[in-house]
Length: 149
Image (tube, rainbow, N blue to C red; front, side, top):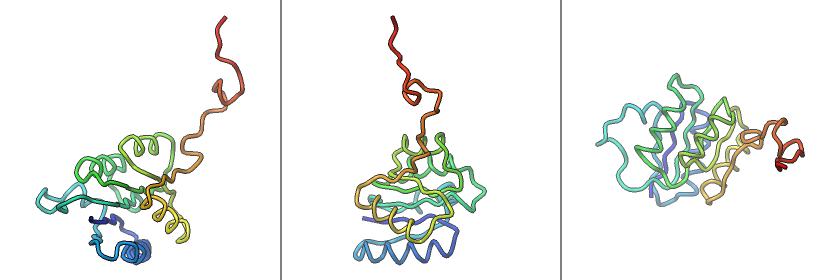
């Protein structure tokens, strides 16, 4: 199965490519820019299933929501991790809805990135706690009751 890295950041690409090649010794590891998802002709897309994809939405002018949608619909990876400068409940919820297994805020240390990649590749999920935080005014968050009398 194929592994796909979609990023601009050269430091990230070098580090993650090295890790992915170690973890996927026999599977091909492809590297492209995030915009490639929007621009590639169908014939240029990888054939066969994508086992893991890492999509780095930082450092691009493309709409991150369009990138999420393109990855989900055009390639449908089995597991995927999204990196973004903006990790908010709307973005994270949309990524999770489309099938992402995790989101990681950028900048992230090499150790955080390696751990998130390993976790998602192994079938786990990696979402920041604050990404799905409930507002304090909600009945559940404030300890109030929703029972009607």
